[in-house]
Length: 462
Image (tube, rainbow, N blue to C red; front, side, top):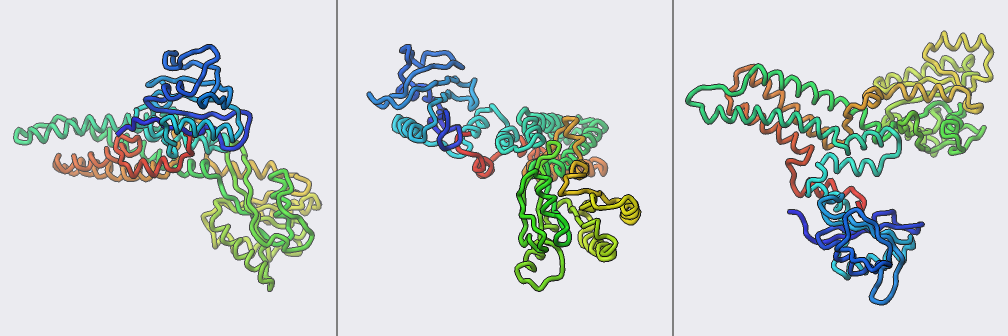
């Protein structure tokens, strides 16, 4: 049921600033706004055209609260599909609260989290996947996540799902029609075309499901654990990557006793670097806890950077190889980048020897910031950005991913039923289930609990 009352909320971040925007939406939004607004040209907001701006003052009886600009958006040509006004006032927190409290007294109520976008969905301005993309767009903190959210908000993902659902629905209707004429034993749905459609739907669903692996890391960032023995330059490397003194650097071994994390955007992709405690045998209780945490962070990371002091390879090469094998055996599926640090101290023959011993090695000098860009490029190579460059649909939402998996399962059941001449009535049940899961993505099938869970994660005012 679409609510009819008028809601109000601060649409800009809370706190003092140059300006703040207060948003009102609902059937009586313009009337309520007009009751507290005095135009400098004596305009009546209720008679003004949509998408217009008006200068004036917000008045609490005879008291002037602020000079403001009021924007008018008349439904259905507004974000929510309802009458909407936005009051641009000065950014004092006192002024913001005074205006909001005045509007509450005039008949508004405070908006719930995401209620403006919920109303846009209920009024058919957005489908559910587009509405969820609004939250992703607000939280995007790198180029790639922004690009995906924009593509989804424009309807790229939902359009692809809607087309498949429509074609499947057409065949479902024909099969349902066959059930009405069961005694005549006729076929309205061309089985060959239906099989081709199921193959195409299966192909698209598998591609979308596979894209989640890329989408998930783009949306949440790729955790990278920097590991190695104490005093090999892990903290120096973190500082070099971030281009700031984020971690304490010392000649004393075991300085880093806990994990330090920070984020960096490389090529539009977010990476979360984790500087860990040095791995070594120690009787220090606190350092031992840090080393245990290191292995926990390796478990959580998607990429492991193993750093060692290349100038000490002659002395500790055998020990190093044992450590490398230990990490490879313990985490065989994780990409491992082997880095020889302090390469500026090496002679040419030592470099040749190192590369022959460890062909995949990347030589750098974190202190001198040599080879750091090569490391960034190698990390970027672990992310398949081809789909992103080609503007393909990429799934980032766990709820969508779950619905796609369930839809694929039902489509494969329908396909099996078609190949084994399953009766039309049983096949129709599997098709309905597939249609249900498609509808869950775009919001053609919803319930109050689902909507509550989705919009509870929005900020108030959006």
